[in-house]
Image (cartoon, rainbow, N blue to C red; front, side, top):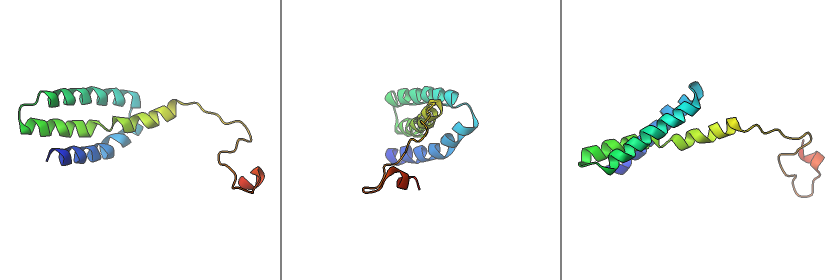
Length: 102
């Protein structure tokens, strides 16, 4: 019962929190999720009953989606520029670079 609750909360977190990162400041969202995740994990460590474990598991699952927030945040902070003429894909064996760009 604990594992499905955590997984369903993770799925709910994906649907609710990941799109929220496009609407609010992603940096504040990541920090907030980490704080809530730390509190939920602490609650899980000191839980005395099944209901408290399930509630903490739901909170852990919901906020564990913070990893999915970090990936687009890292992509936004990267200021990558590609040099002119740089080919992003390798040409197929036997073809030249000019044929691969088509």
